[in-house]
Image (cartoon, rainbow, N blue to C red; front, side, top):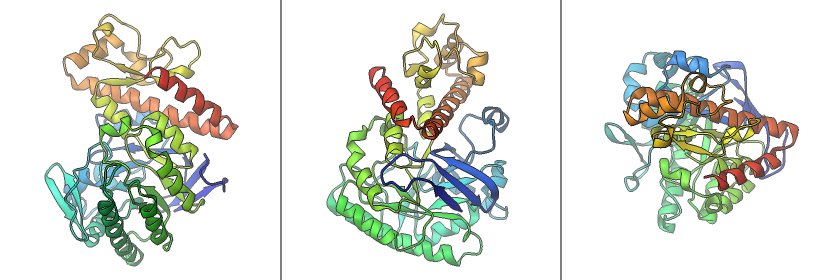
Length: 392
């Protein structure tokens, strides 16, 4: 795996290129990149034929949370990879330890193991068990095992335990990674822990940069789940900026979680390269439609960033969610119909909203890359953040 960027500045927005993945040697993925959040190896509410119509190119990567696939290990054992089981062979897999759309349950870390919660309950994974799973699922990129169960309320004692446990797990994972015939060519990322304690963050980075990892995950800032969308950038700014100032500029930086669009823009402005689409998923689960990108459609009448589609005001509204949106939902269905599906709790409502929200968020990232290329990202960021703050 190879990551390149023309920017050598620290804590600055940048374009990058992820290439030379073992299964996709000829494909290049531009960053800032949006990983498509999955559950059980597939995007929630979307069948593969629908997904093919939404994604106009194959240049997308899937975020695969371990808790959603851990019970599929026996079925995957004799296959080439998880992608063969799920039928998603044309998309690279990025394996994460936790599901960013689900709030983690703290307090179950023991010795050198990390607790992973699937729908069948808790499973404690030490580095050997974890790397066995990695070898079974054969992801294109994965995160080394770590203890990321910290947030702004974590005590110093808890933070230092998380850093030390993550250090032990990281080196054991790296040792296994180097020796493995199966995954030695997969990308491995080092998780930066330490909560909001800057000294702990520095200690975490000091041991991570001893090894030649392919990138870093800025971890340990939140417990995941829908509440992450309410975190303001000011809460995490100092911690993230300090962390990024210590990491090698040439390496890829990742931040996972349901960050809202304003935080995404600020993190990109600090040099973070990769995110996941758990945010549009949790928005869909709340019967909401993302409309903040409609601001950039000419003559758009919509000034709201998010619409709650089960509201009575849409009962007789026969316009699409966004008049100039080109997604399948907006081309074929009205607000009134989608509101009816929401009120009656029809599964088709989730499908139509997921189609729209994924389309909107992919357009969001496409626009970000375009603005970085033409040098207008700073202006775009200020304009959009102001719009989001006034119309949230």
